Image 1 (cartoon, rainbow, N blue to C red):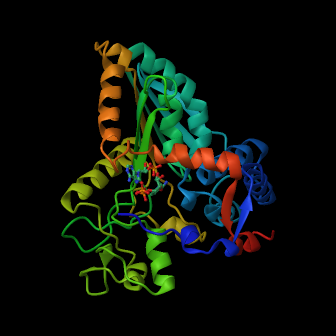
Image 2 (cartoon, rainbow, N blue to C red):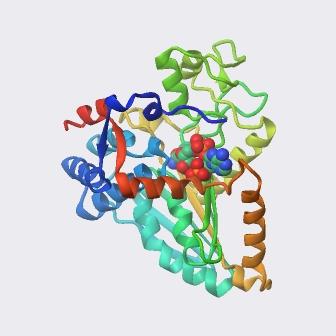
Amino acid sequence: MTYMTGLQAMSESEMKRLSLADVRALAKEKLASVGVDERGSDNLADLIMCCERDGPRSHGLMMLPHYMQAFSSGYAKGDASPSIEQIAPAILRGDGDNGYFQLASELARPRLVQLARKHGIAGFTCSNIHHLSALRFETEPLAEQGLIAFCFVNSLALIVPHGGDKPIFGTNPMSFACPREGVAPIVWDQASSVVALMDIKLAATEGHALPVYGGLDHEGQPSKDAKAISETLSLLPFAEHKGTGIALMVEILAAALSGSLLSTQTEEKDSFGALNIKAGVTTFAIDPAKWGNPLFLAQVEQIAQSINKAPGARVPGDGRLKKRAEALANGVLVNGELLARLSI
Ligand code: NDP
C-alpha cells in the first residue's frame, strides 16, 4: 500500500523546483551556519541531496531543520572525528565520536570491502553515532563493488511489539543490497512499522484517517486515527508478529552488538530538542565469489527477471533508479513552506 507523502499531497504551485546542485548548496550552507566542519557538511549535504534524488524524500531537506537543531544544541558534534579498529580477522568496530554515521562509514568502507574479499564475509559495528538517515546509501556502494550487503540501525522507540502496549523498538529499518550482472544492483531498505511516522503526522494535520491500523489509540487499541496515534506515538509493526521479529532482530544487531543506546533510552535527546537517539549501526558485507557458486550472478538475474516479468511487479528498490533519472534531468520539487523556513 502506498501513502501520500507531504510532498505528494501538495499542489505543484506550493512546491518549488530546485536542481540537485541547489539542494546540496542549501544543505551545505545551513550545516556550515551551525558550525559543522568542511568534511561533515560536505558529507551530510551529499546525503541530503541523494535522498532528494533517489528517495526517501522524508530524509532529504525535510530533515535539515532537525539536523541543524542537533548541531546547534550541542547534541551532535560538528567536528566529529570517528575512529575504526579491527578487533578480529573480519570484524571492524567504530566509535562515531558523536557525529553522523556516514563519516564513520566512509572511513570504514575500504577496509570492510578488503576484509569481505579476503574472508568471504566481514562486519562493521559502530556506536556513539548521532544519526544515519536512509540505509540504502550504506548498502548500495558495497553492492556496486560486487558485495552483498546488509545494514541495520535502531532508532527512537515508536513500535509496540505485537500484542504489547508500549513502544520498545525504534522504527528500526534494515537494508539489503546485491550486485547484478551489467545493471544497477538490487537495493532496498524499509522500516519495521506499518506506516512511517511522517505519514501519520501528515494525515493528522490534514484531518483524515489512515487506510490501515497503524498504531495504538489512547485506550491502547489498534487504530486508524492518525491524530490519536501521533499523540500516543505508539506505532504497529508491519505484519504483526513477523514485523515484531524483524524489529527485534534489528534492535539486537544494531544496538546490542555495537553497545549503543537502546531505542527506549530517549531521555538524553529530549533535553536537546533532538529528533533521534544515539543509535547503533551494524553492516555486514559478503563476497559471493568466495561462496563457491560460479552461477551466483546468473541466478540473481533469473530471480530478478522473473519478478519483473509479472505485470505490476518490480524488483524492490528499483523505483529509486527512475526517481534518480528524473531528478538528474529535471531537479526535484521541494515544499515551499520548508524553503521559507530555511530562509530562501
Ligand atoms: P517504503 O515502504 O517507502 O519502501 C520500502 C522499500 O520498498 C524501498 O526500498 C522501496 O524502494 C521499495 N518499494 C516501494 N514500493 C515498491 C513496489 N511497489 N514494489 C517493489 N518495491 C517497492 O520505506 P519505509 O517507509 O519503510 O522507509 C523509508 C526510509 O526511511 C528508508 O530509506 C529507511 O532507511 C529510512 N528510515 C530511517 C530510519 C533511521 O532511523 N535512520 C528510521 C526509519 C526509516 P523503491 O520505491 O525505490 O523501489
